[in-house]
Length: 104
Image 1 (spheres, rainbow, N blue to C red):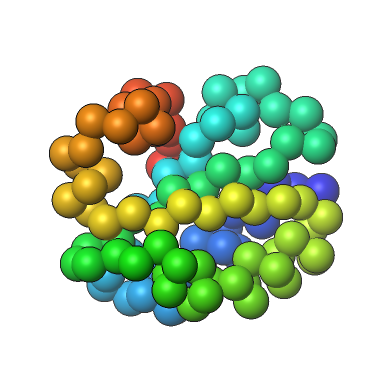
Image 2: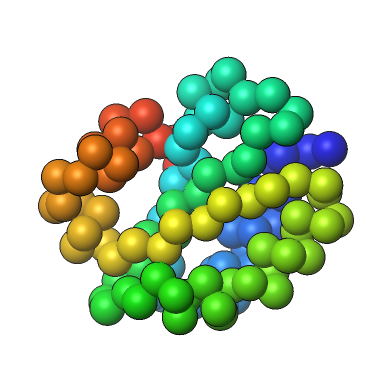
């Protein structure tokens, strides 16, 4: 299993879906901290410009997520967020991602 390959493939597919709306993909959680086990999920935050409706964005990405999960025997967990919210909201999750997350 190559987590890095799965992340690269996901990022490329998301670039094709969103084009210039994609601002960044951030790896957070255990894989970003370096304390993941082989059973750990891969937490990815997808930062998009403009209005983001998480359910609709996940619908757009679900086939890509499913294909990569099956191909690499991993579990990618995706959280879409607007660029404005990513940069300004003070929620515990976003504070943690901004502190510990790494560009994917």
